[in-house]
Length: 274
Ligand code: ATR
Image (cartoon, rainbow, N blue to C red; front, side):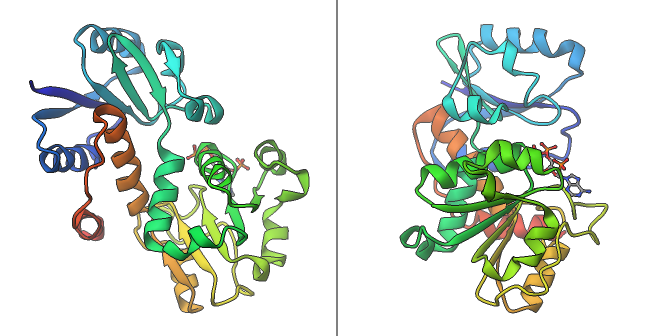
């Protein structure tokens, strides 16, 4: 049997997902294709119907359809329901089930790079941003037992919506003032993304050098925030590895197999560095 997978979004010509999933298919010894479904919003409903009828095994969803796809699905996994966005769909006997693999993918990538963290769940964590990505990461960390998570956002109300206790929601200025208290800083906004790579959402002047600084942006692969963190002697965690682990978890949802990443992390790094 040749399994059919794909990606829905617009525009998606430069997506790295086909490259990642083709490697996973090969690694897992599964015959399959990963297609690009670049559709305009007007054609989204029809495409999803066709996918359902053709019994395509599963697909990924990217911008701008992570929310718009939801009414077209039959069921949502709790992760997708909580985050309010879907990036992976499983076609289970003609029923489309939506998942969000970002949070778990992020956590796996972080704990893979910093295994000691999983034995030290009291670390003081700062999440910068309160959008969909932040919500997914917050949930994954919280469910994994990390007990001290603060969310800083430009719009504090949005941070309060995610944080369990309102005192865990702060402004970006407050985060800067208290930067020395955090052991792990996770940047989830789009500030610093190409073509505005000189930007950074926060100043980290007073940060401890033992802090781990993580940025989910992978274009550029070394953001201004990460460069500053490196200068301060901090350890860094780059965004491209989240991309690999969220795809690995999607593959697991489709096939029940966890593909090994082999040397994909360094290969992807080279691709992104151009
Ligand atoms: P995603 O789903 O990728 O997380 P999103 O839901 O649009 O994207 O969220 C974007 C995040 O980036 C938000 O936290 C947003 O802050 P606001 O809630 O105040 O809008 C943050 N963000 C975007 N542009 C920003 C900027 N120029 N400065 C600070 N934060 C910014």
